[in-house]
Length: 235
Image 1: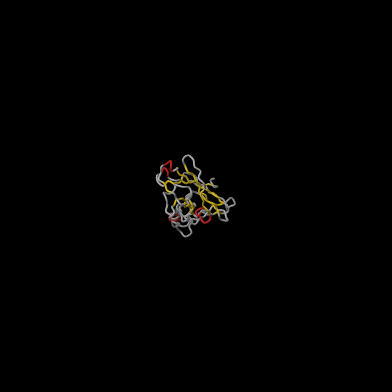
Image 2 (image 1 turned 90 degrees about the vertical axis):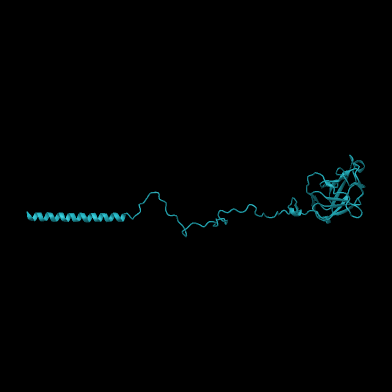
């Protein structure tokens, strides 16, 4: 009986030691597991970078423009290739045609066609060059005396819609020059010796002998008037 009792106590001690060892092992496993992050469904993966950082502000975008920047709205535009600034126009075939210069023209004054108390003349430009050129707008006109001094004020422009007139060599364009008959208007008059005529957009003038008699030189109601250029001679 004594032997049995000792064997039982030994078994109990060994069992207790094994249990204690198992408890210690379990506790140690729990501490190690606490350092491992728990996987959570739907968590985003780390963002991939090539250099580890955000792109600096203002970096170039794929099209070469700085990011976030807009080209200025008033940036310079290319020049007009039509040559319109120099008076050039294009014919149906696409060939540029320059405006008529003073040196390429002859000026003349047509006969008077009076009517309704008005004296009506035509100021004519004829293309004397060997090439086609264009005219557009109003001619400049001024009456002058024998000494070259201007007589009266510049003729006033009438209302009109200018159009480009293409003049082949020898072709003509005209503008009307009119004023009230001085005997009817009672305006102060002078008799010019010449009429200075300047083509549109030109600085040099052509001189034409004036044979139309007296012209009014005072009073707006009797002021001479000039019309926009048209094709032909006006006769």
